[in-house]
Image 1 (spheres, rainbow, N blue to C red):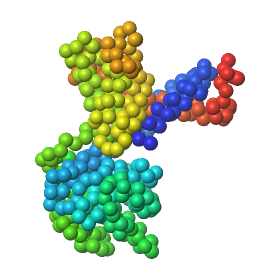
Image 2 (cartoon, one colour):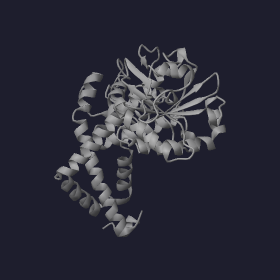
Image 3 (cartoon, helix red, strand yellow):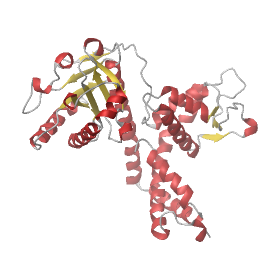
Image 4 (cartoon, rainbow, N blue to C red):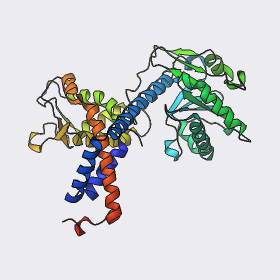
Length: 382
């Protein structure tokens, strides 16, 4: 699960099924103990920072790829390869690549998988092999979705990495090839930065370096020496559906606080519909409306629990768009100042919430051992 989704599911289950007086006391005792446990605090801090770092890394790679291969991008202009889809396989119930680009001339497709910062290359390769099996089982659906006719022998796969991981990834690919009778072909793309970035294909494999590790045709000629990706004419996404919630904060708070400038609606007020529309307009990719609704629900649930927002009573709701209105708990009026007020100590608060969610999880485990899953609380509520 991404960002804080798992913790919110724990919170919802705890609140709906577990949180009577007895188990509230149990949770608070566990929470207090964990707050005094240096290892627990350190683990929560590491989890939080790792999630933020991974989210930033994925955005960097995705936007670099999009800038390069969108129409009139620096690589699209000199090759036949064009960006087609973000998360192209999600609708097929198959583990998805991050990006799909297609060759409009010969009907080839290239699936690009971003290797997570803390995932072993061997694991990434295993996941990619399983993904490719799913792609081949769903060829016709994918062809219809992307509007490009391709065959199994025209599927290429690249693993996008930070430059420092190139050799380890190459070693893992060679080990995989030696252990498999009919191995898949994998290319290694090194990607750095977002402005002045460079994409190149890594060919210096320990046992088999050279042109057989590079793409054929114009794409190989461009990527072998590498191409800087800069001065893109495209407006690229500020965030994606799986962007870490701390990185959403600046965009969402400032946008919501700017919606009613020069009106009689306080700048601290916003509605669920306004946030959902903002995410729907901003998110890149298919099914953005459903994703926007899910993301809105998740963000509001988190901010409400962290005491950053509160519901606006109907008598004070001047937005009147038919959805629930909230207000940021800030006395500021300038959107940037509201954001600064709301974001003050946000990281520390979220780290504490991760610790609290662990206490909830332990309480749920105890509850289910005692009473069973989704037991009738009325039977033992006193």
